[in-house]
Length: 616
Image: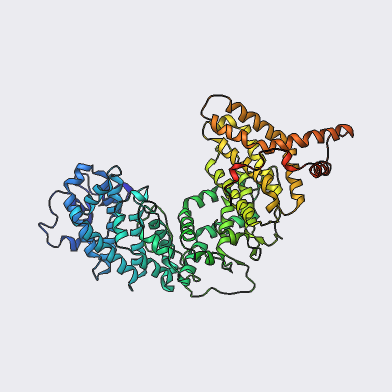
């Protein structure tokens, strides 16, 4: 049978002289979509409907085929269908409950898809009816809560979660989903926590429960009091928080990360590039929800910071579910239950031969394929070996990192930022991500300056990456300015150098680090000179970029003072000694002698930038 025939609810073809036969459930759907009450001539209509297998495709297609006026004409029948679905959830007959849950999924999706332009209140009226909405939704949420917390089958619990995920995700903007007001009033937070804390349910339903919670937390989070935010922020039950961490840690991103690593060792060249592209696409499509859950847990619950840093053995995770997954309506999230022996166990296996890891390390590794506790990141007593995935590039060889030293996790974060900077310079420029990347670096340096933490890090790699980023912006000025305000990003980068120049003595590990900083600035002075010429040109002409370009001009005072002070000394030394090109040691020696005899403050009156006066 063709898909078209199946969608239309046809049972089979007949002779050309006869009409094709339809499933009985489809005939009953047609009665609902007529103007008359379907139970008028058949008092057992609703009982019979929920004993029949749901035809989701037909029901959704039928709803989507109606225009607004047609929907309003049969509103009473749709309201009645919704009401009887909710009533069927209390039935002892499991088939009725399953069919009611699936029918509700079709109702939510079908009505929303057809009426995207309608207001939230109109959709509530079409589905439930204004006069009975509060009562109907209360009954629905209470039934779902009972099914999730009860001793019913795992398939029913899975369907309940799928229905809730469907309800939450029917609109592109979750805060515009007005029907969620009833989910806020009739909270199922405790049911979600019970799923996460119960050994018998967390393996199969934990993933969907975590994603559902992350989405509910984001409903109008900045506009009104969200009870899910309040309740999540005060959770202090350690087993529940541990389970939340395990759900995130053993989510598909870890499996993909492991597969990426395996393939990386096996493949090179063109195939590797293709594989990388495929993996990144897969990650973006499947794991945004679980990363959102991680962010919300860390952001809202201070107890989760401790859980984040707890070490657990790195266990090989099966990529397929151990138990059969019940047939359910698909949701936009494509969520997958995590049915794993380890998740169904009250304790993790402890094997001294297994390498230990924690969720923060796992997150950093995952992020390196495609931040929050500063104190923990910089804690010198909490050192870890973090092997980041580094893209092979033409201008660099893939570094072997078999003996990565144990370092504070902030080093891995900085490595990740540097890796992003050097690997994403492309015409389709991800400006927003670059802004966030540089802001992360700025935040970390501000913390180090504030706490006078002298981090032993290869700062030179960061400086080189930032300078090359400026070079890329200059080389692609015309193309990039058509889409982005590149002066904002350039200002952030230059101000990072100002941070190092002005406050480096409070956080750079040695005086030799200052020599390396000056050497990099002088060595790459042409890029800074070109940047100054460009922003000066733009700032002196009338146009939309005049003001942001002018800010960059002023921010370059320190860098240009260093270049203008040291370059003549270096050129003079080279001329006197008849050297065409000085070595790094010679340049650094000259710079050191100059710095010994000249106070840094004599270079520029603007060294102590007002921009950083607010940094505590």
